[in-house]
Image (cartoon, rainbow, N blue to C red; front, side, top):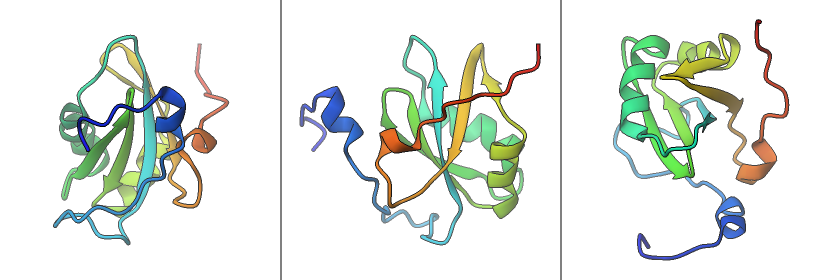
Length: 119
């Protein structure tokens, strides 16, 4: 599947299904995040750095979906609340926007249209 070439539109129409990860459970809270950057960013770096802030005890998992979009699985329920309510946040010099994960929707339907920013 890694060699499968998809168009940008086809990638957006992919639904996310539960993985067989030993740490993640289907009951774990999840959110979709998108980094607004010109370069591609690393999912593992996000999981380690932001996991220390949002889920300091148990951590979190971060799955790369496509083009700087990630599925965050919070191993602490409070982590999701922090990610969605304490935002927006910056990762490096790039803006990270978060939206609640809804497994019934496609990725492009979960886009954040408004980002509150203090000037």
